[in-house]
Length: 167
Image (tube, rainbow, N blue to C red; front, side, top):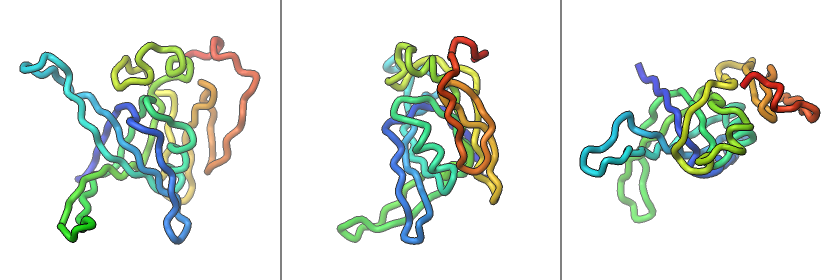
């Protein structure tokens, strides 16, 4: 079984590209804390993990997530062999993201200390987006509000006060 679950902060804004056939693909990296503190340095170690998300999931991530924002993803590990510009064989690992989840409210992202670095508290999940199959449904947080979506249709909510929301 090849299943990966990660929660971390984006190290840069997701980059959305399209293949020659027009298929959207987003690439990004996550800074993921290890579950322990190093005895040598007395600091928490961080792994930087490359991720790729295809089609609707990639579009969703590139539209709604930015550098420094906490995100939870699940998917599978993929190992790729390739040649560099000098003709040397290289190998790289990346996570192919199948689902992405909000892990903090917009209010905590915008006003929380440490929101732009790679440490900080984690809050409860605000929503998810599932890329499996032809019909995609899930939840997308907009302005801190969670609303059901189908495909890539998103409704703007201009008159919602974040203080009235339960998260």
